[in-house]
Length: 224
Image (cartoon, rainbow, N blue to C red; front, side, top):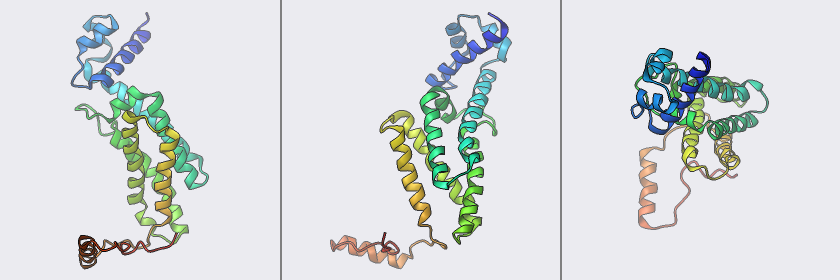
């Protein structure tokens, strides 16, 4: 086995162990034993557990970032873009389950530029530009685009983490539900959103406690 082949073998073995046990639960001894090599071989190629972990995380971040930014840079209708991005994340989870498990774990050695949260931030920055253009055309304040971009991307990312374990319903159904909530919510954005005034909130809560038929919450009477 060449040095390059050995390196790739160690990465595959370590990737499976980190996904199964996490960074803290995995040792160099285990990596070496599963790869049928001695500990010095692992140290020779990566310098230790932190080194091999960092390489794995960097690779996974690159793979996932490429998958997510592809739909965002192709252009097209914003709804189709949201659909494609949601499906891209679910596709990655389905085909790179071990890699996604590693990314969503907290690690003491992950750098600021190589974490799942920083990756999501990069994607949100791209979504921000798309939303800003749409907000401008709809008469909404484009300065609020960064807020909604973080919300939208965060919602998709957290749903992906949930689906990692659930795997039900089918990913197409999950993506459709995500787009249903995101797209219909974006279509109904208020120009100047405000929290419900305390007096109104208290009045509605009194009505609910009295057992009377619940009136529509203020601001939700809009016909569909």
